[in-house]
Structures are given as structure tokens and as C-alpha cells.
Image (cartoon, rainbow, N blue to C red; front, top):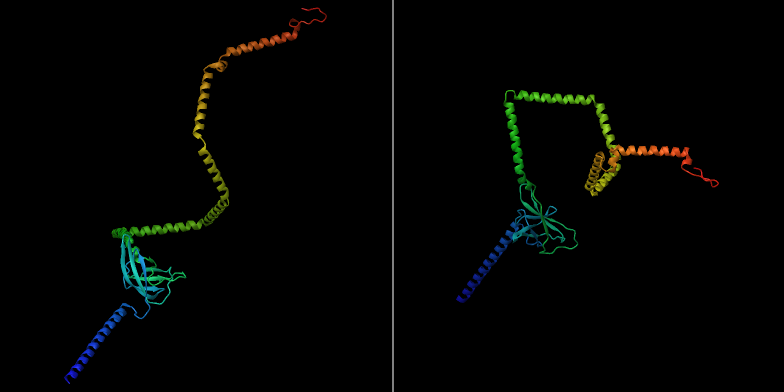
Length: 321
């Protein structure tokens, strides 16, 4: 009877141990499911992992959602550096929706809003082939709208300093006793000038209209003559090219040398050097030529008047002297 009691006691202990073990297993499962639920993971949905390697993730963190056309399809589960020279950062995306992703799709890190934060957008591709679990897809980063504010701070500070200086100068002008009065007078003068300008334009409206018409006509004429002007410009270009290729310096040198030679020759003639110089400056030759010409004329006249003195003619064998 004691043996039977001890067996019952052992059986009860085993049952209690089994219950404790089952309770522990159930608690572990509940804790695991609850933790994943709090992380946004659905243990009973399809899970597909994709990867992207960035040069700069723009502050992306594990846990940031993944969207496609504004619809959440997963989340970023891991962000880690895989290389430091050059820097490469690998991100792991868990896609919990049962969708086909073309292999030319791209993960894009984009700003969530102006207050900060990032999200991952999946830009669907057009390929007929689909990516598989564990594939690495292309990636890109969109800079936030506030990215350029830091670069503009210095310029904005300079502008604000200038505005502050202008305000202080204007304050000093108005602070003077006659400052406001002078400013009012200045504004009044400006108003008078604008009024005079309006009246002048009104009085010469016809002239202004003709001027505008003439300018329009001139522009139309210039437009119609543009082909001829192009030809003229082309001809000038051709002439300039020809002149550039010609040996202008050699031509000018030769011309200068010729002028110098002519100048030397003229000086020699004026100085009576050479035959031409003697002829131009010595009248003896001229007088001799004149005397010879006169004697030749007298000789010709005498031959004409008395040919018998110079020519003897025999008709019948008789000679006349």
C-alpha cells in the first residue's frame, strides 16, 4: 500500500513538472510573439528579405518603415557598415507583403517630414524578371528640404546684418530734428518728379509712339537684312583671313625700300650726278643739240635750193660741176 501511494505521489509530481514546462514554453512563445508584435512583425505572414548597399544612408535607422506608393509593406531590420574604405553601408529590408518586386526596382531613402526622420520607399521597376529572397537591389537617397538651410545660414546672417545696419541708419536719420522733415521733403520731391515724368510722357505720347514704331520698323528691317549682313560678315572674315595669311610685313618692307631707292635716285638727278643728272642740270648739252639741229635745218634747206652742189648727174656722158 505504501508502494501504491508512492507511485501516485511520483505521478502527481511528473504531472506538475509537465504543467510547469508547458507553462514556461507558453510564456516564452507569448513573450516572443508579443515582442515581435510590438516590433511590428507578423509571425504568420510571408517574410522576404532584400538588401541595398548605400554610400550614405542619410540617418536611416533600423525600424524605419518601408513604403511603396505610400503603403507600408515592411520595415528596415538592420543597418550596418560593411566597408570603411570606401564607406559602404548595407541595409536589410523585411517585406511582409506577398508582392512581386521587379529586379530593376530601387530602394530610396527619403525624408519623412520637415520635422525629421526617414523612411524607405520602394520604387517599382518595369522588368519582367522578379527579385528573389536575399537579392541586393539598387538604391538612392533624397536629400531633405532642410539640407540647404545650413549652407544658407551665413548668407542669411549677412542679409540680416545689412538690414539691421539700414534700420539703424534710418533710425538715426529720423532721430534728428530735421530728419523726418527732410525725409518728407525727399518723398515729396520724388512724387513731383514722377508727376513731371507722367506729364512729359502724356505731352509727347505721339512722339513716343512714333519712336516705338520707328524702332519696330528698324528691327524688322534689320531682321530682313540679316542674310545680307551675314554674307557681308562672311566676306569680311574671308578678307581678314586672307590678310592674315598674306606677308604684309614683307610687302611694306619692299615698298619702303623702293621708295628709298627712288629718293636716292631723285637726289642724284638733282645733284647733277650721272647722265640724266647732267642732262637735267647742265644746259651745254641742250645748247649743242639746239645748234646742231639749226645747222642740220640750214643744210637741208641748202640741199633743197642747190642740189647741184651736192649731187652730180650725167645725162650724155657730160659732167656738170
